[in-house]
Image: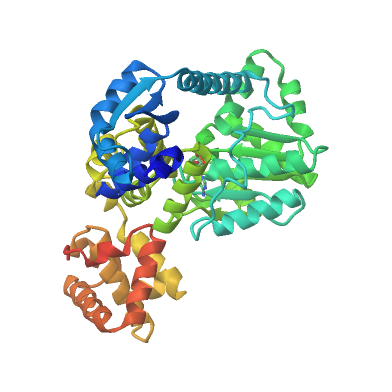
Length: 476
Ligand code: ADP
Ligand code: MG
């Protein structure tokens, strides 16, 4: 007994282990660990076991929670039967706490200083976002092709293949990030090249400014000596003929000299609104790639990478919850994650659960209606690309295998994932609605016995950014 008392570290370690063993939930254990990290010292003097904390508030708070259970654990660990537990304010704890606060303030200050430091020097009209690098870009099936082209352009900008590089896709899917990653790479690895990033809206505003101050020549000059032009959100100048003409002159000038142009847009070139046909034709001369909706796996991988950069330890269920409930925009997913992080900061002792997440993210969650926003056409396209058949064949009259199966799979997935009526689905397939219902039911039965077909159906569902489990919910 005496020996144990002499080894106070042991006594404490054993008591802590016993106390933790008495906790039943993972959350209670996490909470204990968080709290215990604030205990700066511990010592047994006579029959008083003192635990040092930073201030009186903490002392009262922890005494209320732990004085009794720790006393029990200490006795079990070999402390005197009449031991009492006291939380006391100690200088060392105060100092440690003050030091922690000071370091935190220092970090805040240096971050603020960094943020207000002048942007890095290069000829870009708008600064690049420092975190939009290739390293920070998570690859998945939805963006792998775009990523591959972007990285090959970054290594060797210019020339006539992959020029222009036209990236399109929905909002918040990573177009700007990927485009700027090319810019960062070239700036870092090829300092002699001048890189210019701007949105088409900024181009328009600059154009108007120079026009009104009659300094068009300076404006043109500015864009003449660029090696890599990154023009974001091209769609914005749709219908604005004059500025389009001006942009096109710049564009043609750069192309003539084999300079690299990268464009992003919310639609592919052929669907551009308010652009002259000859511009569209020129934009199609390089390579056009869509960034698609990320799959569930990719969504979770992106969240984890953002969490890593945030420096917080985030419970797994947060990723699953956000990944399952926010599907259409990475930006919205990031917003959700930030809310959770802020909540965790403000409530370090509160374990995160489904209910908290529901409440916290209510505004961001995509309700069933928006989740069902997939159109029958999108489903058909995904099935076509999986089976490598054309849209025309899909809705045509051919009945050969695997065409017939592919068609029924598309019918099944349309029923499961789009929420469109049987009638409008049938119109899309150019068939009777009973044919659609029959086709769909036939796949439903087959996947119960055909594992390969089941995994095909699940894969296409994933490709559409949806969770295979939805297929087995009762919503036919
Ligand atoms: P878009 O330009 O397509 O609207 P952004 O490039 O602005 O979208 O991306 C929105 C947010 O999502 C950014 O913070 C970006 O870093 C993030 N993001 C999108 N895709 C990825 C990805 N694959 N990996 C990491 N972050 C991503
Ligand atoms: Mg963008």
